[in-house]
Amino acid sequence: MRRSVIAQKLEPALRQSLQAPALTLLGLDGERAAVAEEREPWVPIKYGPAAHDDWFGVVPAVARFRRTADSAPELLDLIVKVNPKEGMAKNFMPWMSSRRV
Picture (cartoon, rainbow, N blue to C red):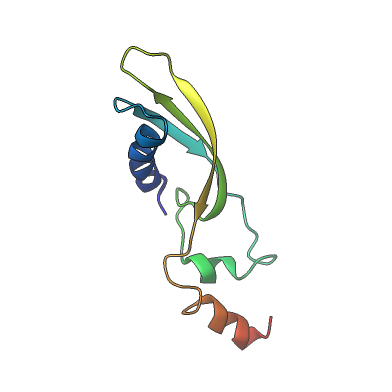
């Protein structure tokens, strides 16, 4: 899932959870773990093709935001969990069965 889509959904969630209706998300930084397909060949099967800015699985992240326009920026450490686009039963489980993993 694109980081921009995650950020777009995160801003209203932060407004609600932090009870800050004027909150503005300034940035969302983080990096998905580099995955060696030799070590974990199921990752592209499970999550589908990914661009460099796509996040999948568990991604440590930091949200930068302001509660109000005149407040100081704040940081919030997060763990973002992105689930596969398709159900695991459709792609992942048949792939595992065919390889007897």
